[in-house]
Image (cartoon, rainbow, N blue to C red; front, side):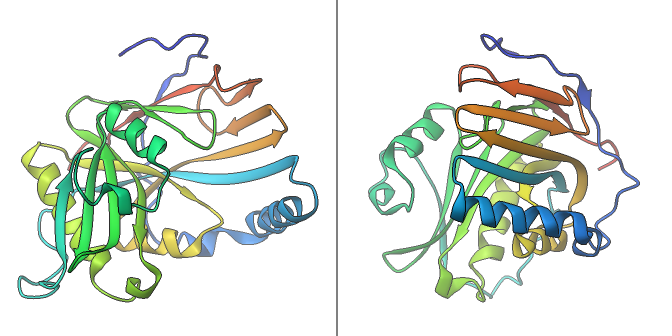
Length: 246
């Protein structure tokens, strides 16, 4: 594992397999709801401050397709690289896209005709958070991937693009010997949580980010537990260990 300058250290954490994908939404309760209301108020009236809550989750790489063979044939899923002609249509800043490819991330693109209707990114390299100051390192190498930035066009969210993307991604991961894919999901986005629940996710830990201008405080139920950063040059590293038995 490469060393990052000025980074705080962290211990490996493993999945708490007693936490099952029962109903994550039922467990949100008044506390997360209150946090969400505070976060919305801060964005509107005091953007100098912010508060966010995330879950670190893992889901097994499916052994079979989510869709029957004949369904979703009108959606083409491609694995693209940095010079693909559709890159200019991705709904993300070009600098961010190039940063992802430079970090060896892979992009799976769902298209209908000549239109992009969705994308999903995965990586097996250390994943640096683009929004918050945190880096996730996967363990053991080769058996775990990190998925991020799943996006579906608004008019396709009731369709089959989501399942087609995951089918193609899972097929690739199985060929690579990957058993689990991990990610961080906002506790403030019920639709994302429900989508991950349907894929068999297991909740691992909770992360809280509180920011005041250039200062950012991480509070977590995993090492390093508390980390204060004064700039993007310093960030905690969290090692994510894949669960056994899949």
